[in-house]
Image (tube, helix red, strand yellow):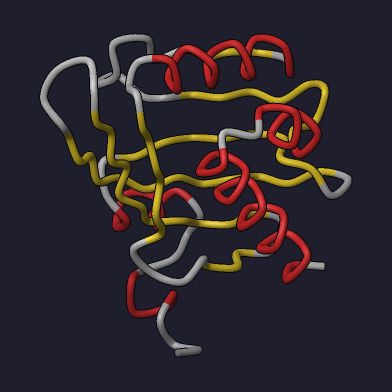
Length: 138
């Protein structure tokens, strides 16, 4: 089932980039929890689909255009998926590019938990992998 988990996360990135909030809502478990981390202005946790979707909507409204692009292949970690990404935004001030990583925990084919990290090494450590382990299948 892990490849299906990767496809759900891939679909979430596609929905974010398309601005399709309804598709994003459908990909998140009703009891989803999102943690953005201490470095984030609003670190959360955000609990429940409505709270997470509200946070997504607020983030999208911050810029005129926003895209999140995976920097590496999504990493299958059983019931979790690790993603390294760059998030670009333009409008409402200077353009920005934020690099980070996230761990998506899956339940019943939906995103159940999201935890953001400063970099891929931290995200991999959270799931018990090293960068060497993650790229062993490459």
